[in-house]
Length: 229
Length: 295
Image (cartoon, each protein chain N blue to C red):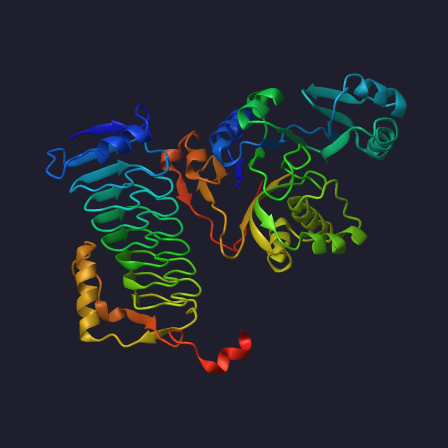
């Protein structure tokens, strides 16, 4: 197993080595030591490997991830897994703002809390937060699912398109055009699958969640609003 | 952009290391603010005396001239472009009057029982070394690395800002209603030395504190009255506080242990602190006042 100590090796060297890996590489498990909050660690990966990062990371960790599994054994700074395409990112601590922003695919699991704008403009990613999320989360979320075991801050799902939001705790307020919707069997099945994927096999009851989504009133221009422009 | 750092010690045995720890934190924040840097340190204070931090050139002999002029012992410690004067509290007005009349080229940038305030244009490491920050001790300190956006790269535009005794503020962000807040504060006697938006935030808190508010109450009120983007870190003689705007536009990370409370724009700035591996590391919530007071 390659071990890279960032106290000795530059972040650029590390990322270059990870980017150079072939699809059929045998070096499938990497360990990164002394991340010390550095930015853009393990960003832009595109190989079926696992990268374990031993500590807190800075901004944009595992950004643009494809295929890889990235595990952060600490907190993550702004924009963890932003624009992820596939693969998984697992943050064992808290995540700062804009976790999973604009991500198209893959699974982002956050064991702690995520702060403001979690899942902003998400485009197909699945996000499971075991703690709570901050204000303005899932703003303009387009598709994918956001599962929150704790509470959600102000303006959840403002101007949301077709993403599905599942929150077990309190929602401080809903954003424009975001409404509570029924939790049907198809949603319970999706929720169960996501909780399982996040390693919560049977620990959490899907019936305890509420589902939120778009009322679709912002999709088309409404002539009554003409005077507002 | 800007980087801000703050360190508030609970464990007295760390006090001799305050400057070294704060300087290290500031240096890490160089790439958030390479234009200029500044810091406030809350060090020793003597009963009945005040400290004035004076900035300018030709500082040799100022303390001696003041001693003669006000007929009291005025001590001076010269650090590069800054001179910290220690004088009897009752002579503060006389000393300020003498400086205004005889040395109008000098600026009084900080005043209080314990505060010393230094700032200059240049890389944070250079600014720290010029003033000998690593050798300074104290109970708490606040630092700033500036990437100018709203006003020119000058020493006047560097942080921290101090508009009241033993008070200082550093700011990451920009305020949009600073002109109108300033017009409200000036008739109330709050004085400003620059056109900087952050100085208005400092002046606002000075006014609230003067009106009897606690540091936490003053910051709470600022959420209603200040408009714009901000993360503030504020120091008073015995207090240390943090506030972010309601949409948490600017980054912030905090760490708390039994020995200290630390603030950084990014976690990287906190990595060099003792025992950081075991600290409670958290992101301060938007529009929530975090305040600590020394007993």
